[in-house]
Length: 459
Image (cartoon, rainbow, N blue to C red; front, side, top):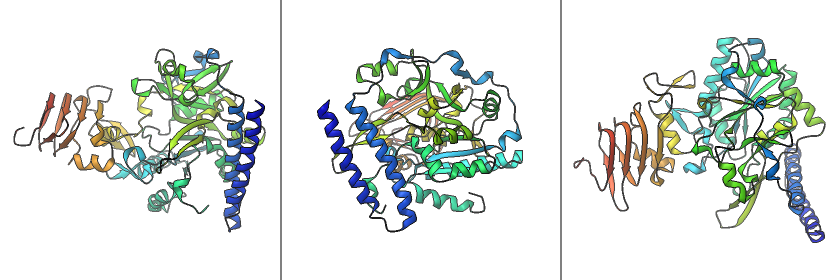
């Protein structure tokens, strides 16, 4: 332990000196001050990480329980009330720092066109404009970018100009995770500005979650219940086993992320039986309570350690925090179990196909399930590695197929879809190694398994 403490001290001093050197490379005084603040936040996170590692600080798995019934309120039990007075005290913030790297993108994910030639950001702006116009209120939209997404975001937002709205290789830096939200609100002055404008509530969600629209029922519940923090959760499926979940830890409600789980308990964590819900990252925050917390004890959010490998093969770790972890700092904080329709993220090209399809239409920037869809659920879509990158996806679909009557689609291998293709029931298309399948224009596939090496003429 003495050795660990000594090495921690050396690492801390080395990091402090290196950060000071970096800060001193910035010439502009205002930029330098802002950069210094960011580096201080990172230094604090780094020293906490070292201290916890030296003490072998881990969650005691035996003390983890599922949250009690009163800590997760069913959405359908909330009264359906719209209160314009409360709406006028609301602000909306979109966490907009992510890159679409998993889909082969190099820029801001929110700049991707997802529906009717509109991007994630376009749809969000439409939603807020409609909300303000319909209820004659003034709900501001705030975008939290990272250095990776700032320029792309500004480029899109310029279209809405009439709305109120350290120099180094970027590859060497990483965004600090959405848990940095609270420091960013304070240090940017946005928190004080919102409070000065009479705003009391903040709805936070990820920019790629197209289901995260302002919900009157949840806002009304927050006002009447006096909850300082509400997390929207939804029922787990097999696709969500890695998502963070709410737990009871020694009588306190907390967020547990998979990265915090000891390796021997990962399968327990993934179990739908023990942990039935997961965090959508749709968060409702009382701004006065946030101000009180940040001015008194501040916020210590659990550190998530993400091992990564850089492009040049160097092994590094990213230290991140999650915004939802703040739930333990607020009074009367709890979860609301919302319908799956409030969680529609686009994390892959399979998700993108669903959103672009005729399953959904748009109403004032909000996705609405097509009334001709007989089932309340959406089809299961699994596209293989040939469709992983957005450029390949766009090349392999001349036009998005009609899937209003589709239950399940699996596509693997070198497959191309023509125009006006219709898919119904369960459709599985498998092109084996060295083979290619072309689905011709106007083709209808219903409960079909296609495999082998098919050309348009053979089909």
